[in-house]
Image: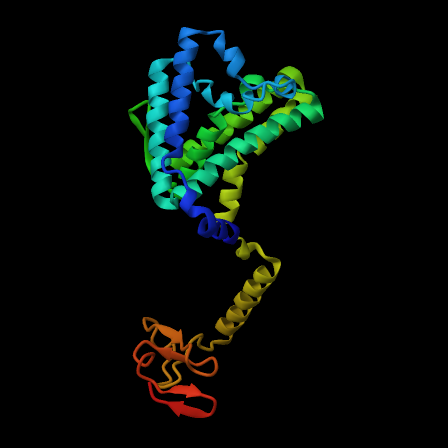
Length: 288
């Protein structure tokens, strides 16, 4: 993504390494607070109406609400997502990792405000780092789809299938809300919450795909090329012919042919003459 490259060149020196580690530490602190003072969770969790009435700390304190109240499950969560974040940070770099995390958190916050103002729905405990954690897993699956996880510490499952299962679970949760409360307003509120909270993965996925291949002009060009190749095959003419020796792919099917970028025109050469021929430049010959 060109925009992200520009940001990295300008602000990359301000990147915070291991940002996900600090978020996990905050979440662990929230777990300890919740265990010692269960009622404290009420003052830490997200509440749009409370924020609008002055309790602005909730914009940040929702990060402290523990992913799970089970210490054992929390240790598994912390180890898994710290490992995932470290893997992605080694591939992306600290700045891009920070941007991914911050975009995910901002998406969650924007979604919570949006559903409150549009539908009047208070998301409460739905606003948590669970979406951020799942977006990290989806990013890992998109980057390394064939990496394996041990489901229940026994069954090896590739990341791409685990990611698909995660998407299915999102759809299941959405349908549970719809079946219980209906689409309006709770179903749409939940849908907006899911989409906006995963905006970091959506932007990452679109930014790393080769979208040029679905460009209508590119699709039309490929179809014309395939049509011409099909017509040439039916006519019995060779697809490739060496400019120097005249050998073709029909006579020598194992021979490789390439175009020369230094020649002035579409001149093709076999592998034997690609680097030894005289370059054709504007009606003159220039020795290589």
